[in-house]
Image (cartoon, rainbow, N blue to C red):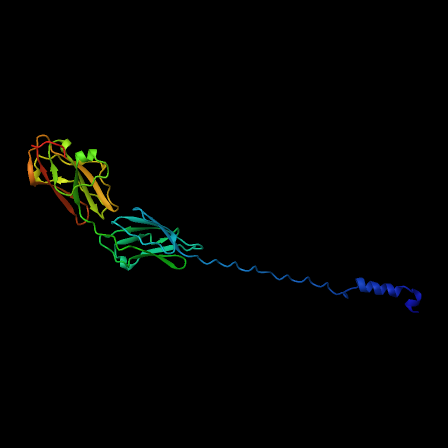
Length: 285
């Protein structure tokens, strides 16, 4: 007897069951597609800009930031220039050095700087070559600062004088007299102000000293203020001392008494001026 004849719906039910549930005859579900990672494009590193130099000095010179700074003209040894190097997109810092034409007359410090700050100093006491330059290096490129051919040798100590009467009564600026000191009376009323100076020199000057020929006819020089005496030039040291004769002084002629002053260079320079004293004629010079 056939089953389909006994249970007419049985075979259909079994086929449906075998397809939906049946032991091992079904196919697996398809796998989800794998996502491909997306890489962001690299950000380009910006190129460094032009290297610019700005500077200010302790003697009045300056330059705004520029790729072609003006030359630095030192007037005396020990003068300094403060430099700022700048460059956009510079993360590596800056270098600076004086070239060989500067010799030992110009120094730069520090040799490297992350901030771009440097100091140029006039060290030597002799003129430098016109080819002297300070070279600054940035992340790319260089900028040079010329140094004018003038880190001059000091000019030597010079002693001049201004009579007390002029010092007290004349309007500024009074130009000191270069000749011998002429004292025409005793006491400070008839005294003078010694003007001791040296061009292209900013170091110290020693106090003036009297020669043996002055004896006790001059009082020891004492420090004085500038008052209305002409101001020193840039790059020049200038100091002042009062000089007078005590009331007990005896008149003496020019040639027996001198006043000298010395600077403090490695090879010192000395200036000397003669003094005469007249005590028999009155009047204030």
